[in-house]
Length: 150
Image (cartoon, rainbow, N blue to C red; front, side):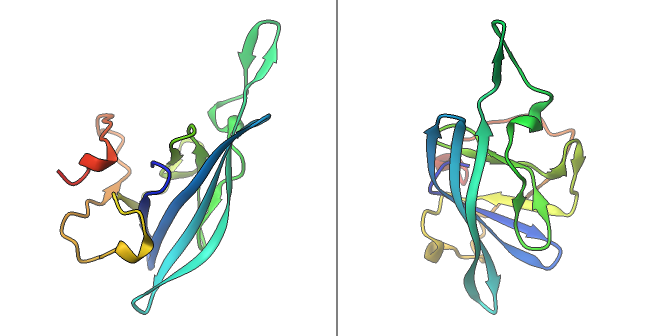
């Protein structure tokens, strides 16, 4: 998700999302500040804020190495009563995965990327919202956020 845009997340009775606020390069990696929110009784309630991390790989004898893809991530993103793997992806975006542990997708999670910038713009009745669930057969596709509803 690009910094500054709203990602809706649904899992069971939870309906809310994440907005990445700011990404910053530091000595040990890229940090992404975020806020999580939840819809309760027709209102949006902020439930958490924090930072994600994409660590710089270790350097050794001319090679970059790490023990696995998730070893470069900081702690998982805690949303309400569940977690998802997530990491800063660069200075302009961050990534949330459909899994809480490596190679174990949470099939109850659905996500809907939106071009919305402000939480007050969210309209859950908007017919352009496209929900996505984990689908191992879906072909990888990059869609610019400004084209998501075209």
